[in-house]
Image (cartoon, rainbow, N blue to C red; front, side):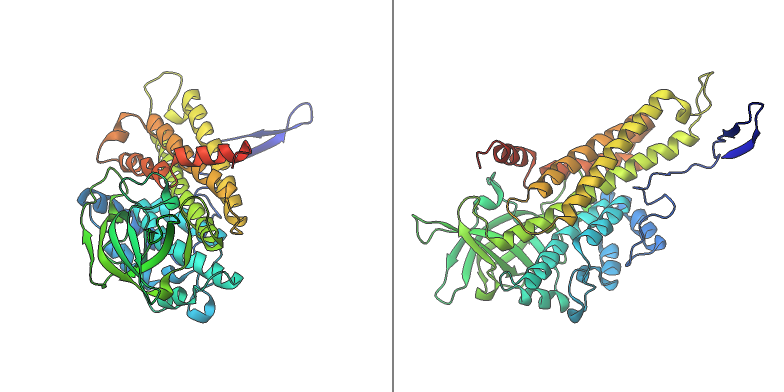
Length: 412
């Protein structure tokens, strides 16, 4: 900005000179000055994660190097209490960490979610005296990596029911049989949290939430993951063939249907905001690419020098920024409000709005950048694919909208 002397009328004249260096100024961007600073990762760390992301995607390979560095940084223990070697990181701070990581390495951030929400919800449960989750915290403190096993072929009601079966044993343990899909972190997890159906009383079927060790006989991984986007998550199928689940690892039991106990409320209260923030990070990265490109891309139009000077481009960028401001505000609110209440109204609304908005913002970025964005050589091509999975995560858009609509209408 350049400030000149007073004009003839005695008024100060302020003129703006565009900075010739491309820049992003939005406070929701990691590229803006004075933005979020991670307590775990440096700028160099993020750049390494970012450089590897394209290779992982092209090779459909797990983010092994990223994972080793992230494990070494203690990030997987972030929500644990200090007494167990964690940092007692709040959901609000962890959500921001995940948004930032999602900006640089979407698949890496998304897969880590599936461990972090177990860690965070268990820490929250222990603090509030909900259930007996101390064992889970101690296993994470000892180095175990947890995965999520809730996806199933043929199950369109999520946690309300299950295709996988749990057969109760006299000692309180269960024998688990069936197949779970989309189990991220397949190469590295040590324990997987699942829900399964107990039909031992046919008139009163139950949903059992428990955990199975990877080394338990009857557990195997089938490498089925070859997806459109977030390919580095390595979300292969996990098959259980009469696999044992220890009695003390059952953390919740409820009747079939949306009859969740308190711990499931805490679980959803962590899962939904963390997931939402990863997709907001993807969208922020996409529009930043468009902004920087528009400032350097020249135009043959006689009335403008750069694409950034075009009113149409300015309008599109403005629309994207407004959408992102709204998404960030909602996901921040959902994280701050996490109290484990059921149904988690704001967290569900944030998940739907954030994932749908992220897709819209990435589409705007593609339009601004133009045809080059669909080249396999362009980062936006990968982000365009990565963002597509957001609204498919359970509960998917149909389930969220149906549920929230029924609540708003007094039907649930």
